[in-house]
Amino acid sequence: MAKLRINNIDIEVEDNLTILNAAKKYNINIPTLCNYPDLHINSECRICVVEIEGRKGLVTSCSTPVRDGMVIKTNSPRVLNARKTITELILANHDSNCNACAKNMNCELQNLSSVLGIDKSRFESTLEIAPIDEDNPSLMRNPNRCIKCGRCVIVCKEVQSTNVLELMGRSHALTVTPAFGKFLSSEECTFCGQCSSVCPVGAIMEKDETDKVWAAINNDNKRVIVQIAPAVRVSLGEELGMAPGSIVTGKIVSALKLIGFDDVFDTDFTADLTIIEEGNELIQRVTTGGTLPMITSCCPGWINFAEQNFPEILPNISTCKSPQQMFGALSKSYFTEKVGIKKEDLFVVSIMPCTAKKYEAQRPEMSVDGKHPDVDVVLTVRELGKMIKQMGIDFKTLEDTKFDNPFGITTGAAAIFGNTGGVMEAALRTVYEVVNKKPLENIDFKDVRGLDGFKETTVNLGGMDVKVAVVHTLANARIIAEQIKNGTSPYAFIEVMACPGGCIGGGGTPYGTNTSVRQKRIDALYEVDGAMAIRKSHENPSITKIYEEYLIKPLGEKSHHLLHTHYHARKVKHNEDKKNVMATY
Image 1 (tube, rainbow, N blue to C red):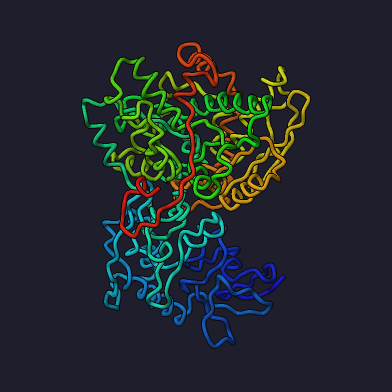
Image 2: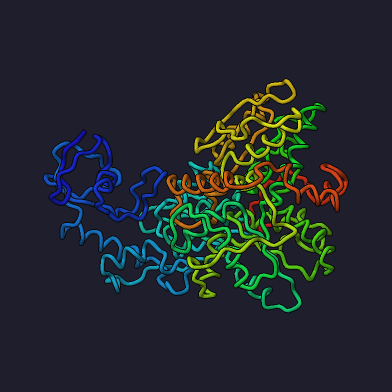
């Protein structure tokens, strides 16, 4: 332990803790722009400088460890002057048209400027306008707003191992960009959006499609329906001022009705359907000598990563569409027939925690008839929060409303799809009982729960021990993919999610997502699961009914046409010109 003084307060903390974290333990806030929980220290911004008695220069508190006897000042005149000057220099090379930025009032640079009392920079603007990178379905990168903090580079390299973004150049010429100044659409970007999740300003964000949804809602010729993913019910509350992990399912339905959606459905319904199809596919592969291990296919970021980097393992990936796309396919077939409208008159919106879902919805394979996309628009949690604010809805005071039918009855197994390990646990609850023909004594598979990057367990299926694994983040996915490619994987079934913590940590969830927040969202989903009357997908009566009425049987001809797809090797053509991402593969 080290004893020291910070701002005349005697404190005692673990030796080698950084000054920044030591101060936090005693509720002393030191501002920073490059530091982010769960990412390694890079000391790029130097906003967090402090003064140490006996030291000649100021030091960065995020990278300087405490030592016994230190006397530290975090807000001396010297420190405040340095901090203000650094911030003004950043502003001089920054697009300061805050009103035109979607992160206005939710921007770390803006907040820091306010705290430091900067209402006008002393320095003239040195900003050289660069083109905006937005020719892809998911993300918008505005280099004119970038403050070169490096957060996006670190998360892209170390958490996702995709190495799409780089810090290029030096000093005032430093830029954050895909290699050689290319665009995201001409690099191996998976559109996971983790870069947008950690960006302190509005330099990388999801492509805003709220205007398209407003236009559809106000079109009298369109029936506009919406689905919400499992993770949305435990993350949207944060976007609207509630505590992390708040369960707001019924309030979301009420808000969507007020916005003007004709029908509000639950993606959990098709998550249950995914388990039936995927579970039967696994059983078929295990019993007939099919390609193993089988890998889940719910995460489009992971699918993009595999298609681009590991085409050899594509036969291992389940042919099931994601729950989002299964919902879209049923909406443009079963639902339109049931309510008696044309496909072109139905507008399907998804609310997802994921930016890669925007890309997934635009894949040419994701169309029942080859003409109309199964899902017309995907909005992130942040975009839905924006729409609720635009409508002036007091979200916290809303009464709960139930989902509409026929996609309203769901199970606890579907709810946990939103976190790492959830798809695996939901599948095991069904596969175990189908294969062993007896109920589980304990349906909680705790070995696959939690935020460890790599989890595994063994399940007895029909007298045979079957090993399964769960990984999240693309860095861990790379490890599992290499094992499969090399023929050394010992597993029969593997769940992969691209984002840390799974969908609850998706690139479209509220800003400020960190390990603590992820855990609260996960706990909330298991709370939802535990409170459900039905906790196994195969016991959902609405799923049974849709097979009887329409799909006939799992893995049958109709379900194969509507609910399954194929994946293919894709290599990026490194085009220098800005082109739509769909044309670059």
